[in-house]
Amino acid sequence: LLDDNSDPELYTEIDNTERIIDSLDVKLRNEVINVIVLYSPRATDLRKIMSYYDMTAYLERIGDLLMNIRRFMQQIDLKGAVFPHFHADLSKLLSSAENMTQNAIFAFTCQDNKLAKDTIDLDDMVDTLHHDIIRRLRGYGNQTLKEQHLTDILCLSGISYNIERIGDNATNIAEAAIYLMEGKNIKQQIARCQKFRFTCKTRLESYNYMAM
Image: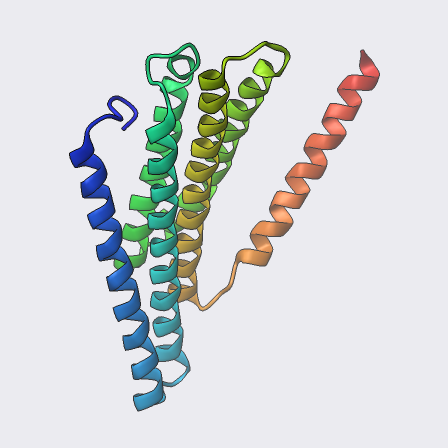
């Protein structure tokens, strides 16, 4: 869609795939509930079941996010004055989120602990790419814009945000993989690290400002 958003068959394919994902999500959730009710699994088995349950939910959310991107792409003028300046950055952001998702799924299905942790580490790069796109879009705020240009800017912001959220859900899948393998919930540990990095960044920016 980043190269051609006028092909109706492509939108039809996306819609059909979304319906398949939704139906599989419902089927898997029902199977998980039935297994728990019928077999009363013990702690280790229950952890595995809940990990698969979580992964299913994250994959379904990724499908929803892709549908959001599809709707935004329909409204963008690919050859207008705005989109060409962001095509390369969006492609890089999308490719990074795609790699994260593929690696997270592989880490989960193959129980690869290192790959799961490497996937989590990549989330910072996706966040940085997203924030850079948003920062550049804000640069249009001081300009007089045509209606289509404004639409393109808003849609680009929405696309970037949804791609960034795909990266977040890939991180969640990787965390579910670690929980499956180690029985450890590392969300709190990651949150503490992110808070520490944010504090360091804020202090560094304050120092640089005072030094000017």
